[in-house]
Length: 209
Ligand SMILES: C[S@@+](CC[C@H](N)C(=O)[O-])C[C@H]1O[C@@H](n2cnc3c(N)ncnc32)[C@H](O)[C@@H]1O
Image (cartoon, rainbow, N blue to C red; front, side, top):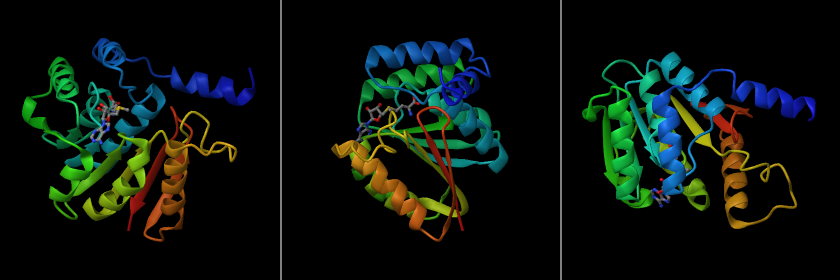
């Protein structure tokens, strides 16, 4: 194993996950939706806590793994508006956050296609936007995120390295190209202070001016 791979594996396992999250990962596996990996999940929690966030938008609920980490990081009473096209995923996520001890009103679950739902959300109304749904739609999600974030708000993009495909110029499939295009737009946006973390499958973190 290379030093980089060993470092990555060590960092991913550095904080042990609890039973609630491990069960949610099993459910996600059954439903066929891949959750945010442990290292990136933990980074999300830490950043949400540092922000003292009270409002967040999550694009891609899945079985509620990243939702749980967001809620664990956010200020008491903080609410996550979380969007998913699959009602079954929302049911699973509801069970996950209940098992984690959060009241149902801490997650406002909107079932629908993200690009239909996002235009209905309030401009400048959110401390955090986490992008983790359809890769080919990442560029459009980014445009909405920039509108939804308040000044000083935090943008998080999961799968920013997309299984090692984003850094490899030979990979030109639709999803990889869309994630790469999104990273380029983020890098060129002077309103954003950015860091590309290689936690999990890559987590892009950026603060909006
Ligand atoms: C990678 S999973 C999200 C995992 C979740 N963030 C977690 O860590 O547990 C992606 C989710 O996006 C949802 N999804 C896919 N296309 C979508 C779309 N166009 N609009 C809304 N949700 C979508 C899928 O149903 C799936 O639950």
